[in-house]
Length: 313
Ligand code: PMV
Image (cartoon, rainbow, N blue to C red; front, side, top):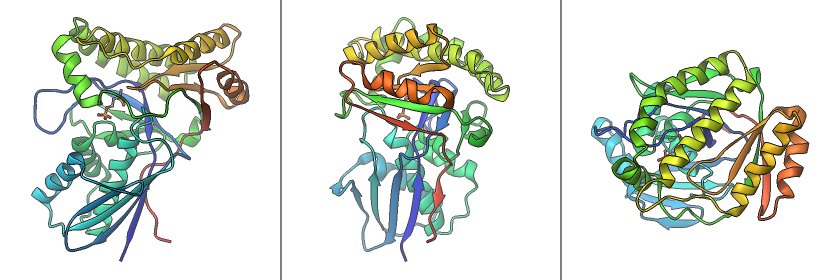
């Protein structure tokens, strides 16, 4: 019997960057995200004689996947598994493929092995594999914060159906992984302690902005969180500069649109792509504007989607 699970990437509006010095891959900062639709990780599972992982058609020896299975096996009886996972979007290029990939994997294992984990338990295991994966268990607007550091849904996508225009400026995998980058920032950025100290207040204000569907407030908080995180990255030693000239040109273009009254704001993860979040009314205009920025290779326009699911068909 094959089990098939699907999950979507999410993008953080309030960013997580840094880990606590404890077991369980606990973030140092709370985060708030939106789960996307259209972009999908599809994971198929079968029981077999030994574990194997195929990602986008190639057999891989990924220590993070092996570690994720090992952690699950400390608590549950899980047979050897053949895992075949495909992303319909660029892998490891700041489009959160690890978030959707691990959310789909945990969801598939939970179903395939009848583990009967709650969504909160699945989120905790996903977090151990990749912090942002904890959030892709849920759809819409999602928070990941103390005290328990499992993700929780904050608002359904249908209640505030914002749109996201993704400007892809470089499709290659990023040069420094989030895990390595976070550790470097923690050890060397002079701004890291302030970043962590401010993060809870930023998160709580964003939770309120989401609850009130206050676009202007969420825009201001999200842009500030993004730029603070990149200030921490850029002030690390050696510096983590994920931007390229097109990244900056997109920010400039978004700022111009804001000046003419468009409801749009930017966010950037650990990569060079720019995500412009906007209301449906301005989607076409924002898409066209970013597609015309020099250095933008292509744009993807997506909506907000559901959490991880099992496909029974
Ligand atoms: O979960 P990771 O290890 O891929 O790290 C995610 C880091 C950011 O995307 C930059 C921020 C976030 O909260 O998703």
